Amino acid sequence: NIIIFYIFIRVLFYKFFKEQNMARELFTSYVFIFFIYSFFGWLIEVCLKFIDFHRFVNRGFLVGPYCPVYGLGAVLIVTFTNGFSNKDHSRAHIFLISLLLCGLVEYLVSYFLEKRYKARWWDYSTKPMNLNGRIWIGNLILFGLGGLFIVELMNPLIMPIFYRMNLKYRMIFAILVLVLMLLDYIVSYFVMK
Image 1: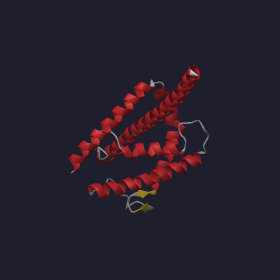
Image 2: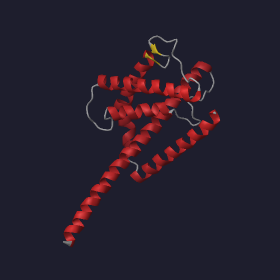
Image 3: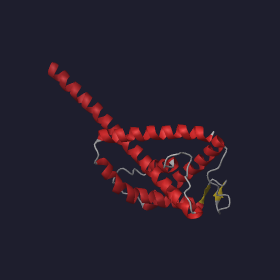
Image 4: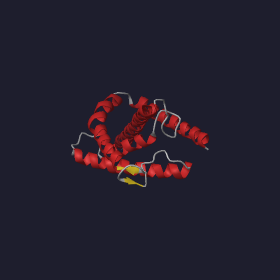
């Protein structure tokens, strides 16, 4: 009976720890995707503004070098297209999902930022085919193309490199990133008051 009890406990804990490791894998992957694409989004925004104004303009509402709306869009794209797996998806499916999800995110974030901070970070009211100046067809097409870029090109390149890191270090990285972004949000909140 003791041997059977021991085996039962081992199997139970093995399943528990295996599920915990799977949850940690997923958690660290989502945090990494959120952070890396928030940074890439910020970089794109800064470069575009530099071209427009010939000087550095820090984009976004946070102090640090990231725009969380891009990270959120990337996480949603990966989630809804099962971007962690090697399943085949039609490119049209990925494009459409990316266009719709990121369009919804951009609209809702614009609305939230305007209500919360009484300011508009972007206004597309002069662009053709816009919705309340919050989203427009040009960006929606870019979101679709960006989703294809993420799922078909970037994630297959960067995720294997990330997975080579020990899970313990990925957890430390994820927690540090979240703490850093939370502190940045708190500082930004008081700066913008």
